[in-house]
Amino acid sequence: MKDINEIRADFPILQRKIYGKPLIYFDNGATTQKPRCVIDRQEEVFTEFNGNIHRGIHYLSDASSEAFENARETVKSFLNAGKKEEIIFTSGTTGSINGIAFSFGERYINPGDEILVSWLEHHANIVPWQMMCERKGAILKVIPVDDSGEIVLSEYYRLLSPRTRLVSVTQASNALGTVLPLKEIIAAAHAIDVPVMVDGAQGVQHGNIDVTDLDCDFYVFSGHKIYGPNGIGVLFGKEKWLTELPPFQGGGDMVDKVTFEKTTYNELPFKFEAGTMNYPGAICLASALDYLEGLGRENIAAMEKELLRYATERLSSIKGLKIYGNAKEKISTISFLLEKIHQYDTGMILDKMGIAVRTGTHCAQPVMDRYGIDGTVRASLCFYNTKDEIDSLVAGIERVKIMFA
Ligand code: PMP
Image (cartoon, rainbow, N blue to C red; front, side, top):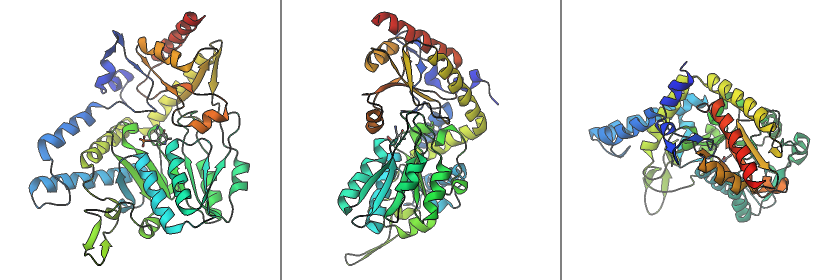
């Protein structure tokens, strides 16, 4: 196992200074920084073997196609999916959810049907379902959360009904850090034959994810939040669903035979991959996943658990600081507010100290409404962060307090 200095040396951006101060990057929930191997792989794609995939008989096209399909295999292993045909590349979590919402809506949804989401969802797991409900005359139902930021399971069981067609929940809240009890959620839905989609955008990078063990029907995530490039994402779907669902985009590559009278679609997974895919993104995402496997996902989870424990303890000791989200199971994300100091002011002053945090509603406005606030300061930590950096955050917050005293 690499030590923390070796790990940090793998991420070139962590060596830079902001306003003359060492960068302290606590905005990993928004996007993660990239290890050298991902950066190098991108250069390699464009200097060694770039050619459009699945289309040519020439050397470069073959090499790119092979690397792209190997990337699919890497994602399949990372998620422990049953088959590589169940791995669809998309533009990201948002792209994946919109795709499923469209296809599922077209195939299965009728007026009066219900879709269940939780109160903790990112807008990406709310709006596509609202759009689908509007198109199909369906109804969106919401599982409430309690004061600690946990979903109220008894209410979920009550909301599940013969009208429920799909449950779509996040693995972890980007705003509060809450980890959802996915096994219970999935078991209850399956007991009445309702499929479950999991938004893994804030879950996949924090530990082991096993879609076979979890038994979810769909699982989605974004490359850029797991140390890979932007513009690439994944949609895992069980083969039986992907076989039945219609494609969400039409175009090149996703077809079998095209005539003006009738078009037939390609086999899985290509049926859902229309047009030139972001193969450089997929190839570099695979490098990021390999890097994480190299560190050991259990090691990553342990490091982040300790960072969360330490940061929670240190931040809780600051007078006038309130943490939002105190669920028993959390990812290493802490949302907080300082008494009488607006989150933007806190964030802007921390920035001048080289500390990057996120402020605002975190694209999760309903959660903020639930707590009657208009946003929080969010520190989202990951394995390359250190306790020294947490100490600097605490010192920075104390300075913000003095400036506003
Ligand atoms: N879901 C969750 C829980 C998220 O945190 C995010 C990104 N903040 C998204 C979905 C959307 O991801 P993307 O913007 O990469 O599509």
